[in-house]
Image (tube, rainbow, N blue to C red; front, top):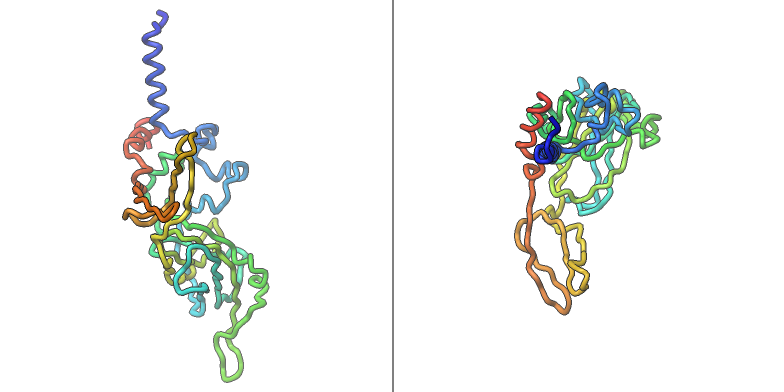
Length: 278
């Protein structure tokens, strides 16, 4: 029997509702053989090894080197809203092109596996079997960006026997652009590249001078009359703030806050588990 217009409409509505509940992802455009497999399509979808670092277990390197250090130099004791810092790794016996440094926030980040966070990745269409990192490095770069590192041009003696040097080691320095992300940061020295990373040593935590600083101001027109404007900005404080404009007039702000939970829906997770059996 040919379906009526009413039944067709119901089917269409159900289909649209299902689409509304399932987050759209480019993963669905991939064939089943590569769906959820970063390894298979890594070389032709612009997925770098750093971007799939959350598939790795970050273990502690079995390195007994007692001279290994990572130091961060900044113009101030507390970080400003926008600055460059120099990260120096020293005490390295055998520099490798697999050595790299990551900036991690917060400084007490847990780099162990977090299988319970799989549900949040499911919402993005990422159906891979993981280990998932609890926290993800903000940025990273290889120590080989300092051309003197692999050549061990900057040698220093770590242990003397009278006037003779018994132990010498190499060092290198790279620069990171740091902006105010409100939580403290630390730098971690890794070996093994992005494929088999392991932790060698960590710096101490570094704090921003004003984590609640209003930043990223934006002015936009409310309508086409050009008689009023809207000013928005990002702040680390939920308190009402004052805007001064014109001839010294002030206006109180309204604050809207969001957290990680606002960007994740447990209901969407249930939908995925129902349809994909995850």
